[in-house]
Each structure stands twice: as C-alpha cells, then as structure tokens.
Length: 309
Image (cartoon, rainbow, N blue to C red; front, side, top):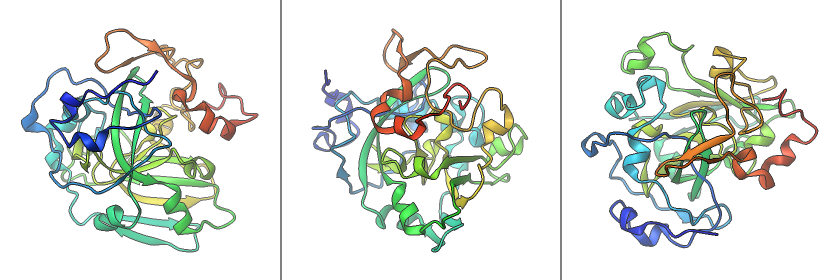
C-alpha cells in the first residue's frame, strides 16, 4: 500500500506541490546521519525546472535533505561517513566538463549548463540499498542515461559504458591518500545503461546536487549496490571490453562487476538478506534487484547471479 509523504518535513525544503502525487517506488544509497549540522550542508540554492516522472516515482515518504546530505560514502572527500559533508567545499565544480567519447559516431562535451538544459529533466525517486544494509528514499532530479547513449551513437563494437570521476589530488582530501586507485571508475553493459531506470542525476529536492552527493552530475542505478552510482563524473566512454570498476579492482572477491542487489549472495563479511531504511528501527527483507525485478530481470536471463555477482 502506498504511503503519503511527510509534507510537514518536506515543505521545509521545497514547495510541497512539487513532491505530491507520485506512484511507484525508488530510492538511494546513503546512510544514516547520526549528527546533523545544517550549517554544513552544501545544497545549492539554485532551483531546477523539471517534469514529474509518473511511471517510476513513488508515494513513499522521502528522507530529509539533512539525512541525505549529512552521512555519505564519497571517498574523494574522506573515508568517514560525515567527511563528505565536512569537506564539501573542497570539491570545485565550476566550469565542469563532461566528456563523452570512445567507440561512438558522435563524441561530445557537456558543460554544467548543458547537463541541466540540454535534456528534459525528470524527477525520479529511487530505492537503493548499500552494502552496509542502509537505504533511503531520495527525490532525485535527472534524465535517463539512454539520452546520452542515443546522442553519442555507439559503434557496433561498443559493448560497455565506462565512467570516470574527478581527479583533483590538490583539493580533494581523500585523493591525497592512496586508499583507492584514483580516479574512481565504474561501468555498465550498454543494455543496462539504456534501461529507463539508469539515471543521470543533476539535482535533488528541486535544487542542484549538493557537493557531498556528487555534484554536478552523478549516476543512479537503483537495482545495484550504491558504489555503482559513481559521483562527480567527468568522462563517459563507450568501450568494447568490460571496464575497470574501482571496488571490483580493489577487492574482487567482495565486489563484482554487476553488483546487483541480491539477498541470496552474502558479502564475505556480512549477510545481505536484511536492510534498514533510514528513519526506521526495524530491518526489512532485502529485495532481489532492490524490488525492480519487473524492469531489469530480463537483462540477466540465463546468467548465474551467484557467479556473476
């Protein structure tokens, strides 16, 4: 049964008319903020114009902006859950360029204005569980990744899409340490990339993305674990071989290329059968493909989902 939004909480962030009358369920990848400090939130005051997505949106209660922005995984800004909020000002997003290249007929570059204005914005709300078994419901604003795919016109031998995040060792405190092989990289098969659930997010709660949430552009793949949703993207490349993915490269026995939400495949160090929605005390059962099986299960027909984890 659908739930009503908590408009008393949400109206403090944006006009409640924007966030009512949604349908299905989707959500995010961020964990619970044990300590809030609204002065440290880096959400921009710049508002975005968008149209509501009626096919994939939800009537579930969203998490607050403070929850979404205060407790994050963004290793470029530090390994602590509150580091991204505390170090948000270190991410320099002015004059941002997103390069689309590789095995395509039409390579191109988008700047920050293009990202917001070139494609029709759709508001989406995603339900996505991270490996710590936390989840959130977030009012993402963005457009389908397939719009970029269609514009680039991949060549016949392009099989995968590779993503690369910002590299700025001078300013980003996390990149001053060799905790990962920087820059952060991720990848999808092209059929995953053109699925309508794969979203390029440029905002949330009616405004542009806060730095700690991956400003100015990030990926959202709601049926996969959170680390697949790469933040602060600077390059999208079409390639013929499975691309390097940072966590798969770092710890291949723990993080596979696909990283689909699968409660039947335990992480080597914990069970993934149960997860906790932020704001709820009791855990709930983790759903296969994060509850999006009707939209994505056909992508993996005939595959061994324990072997291809």
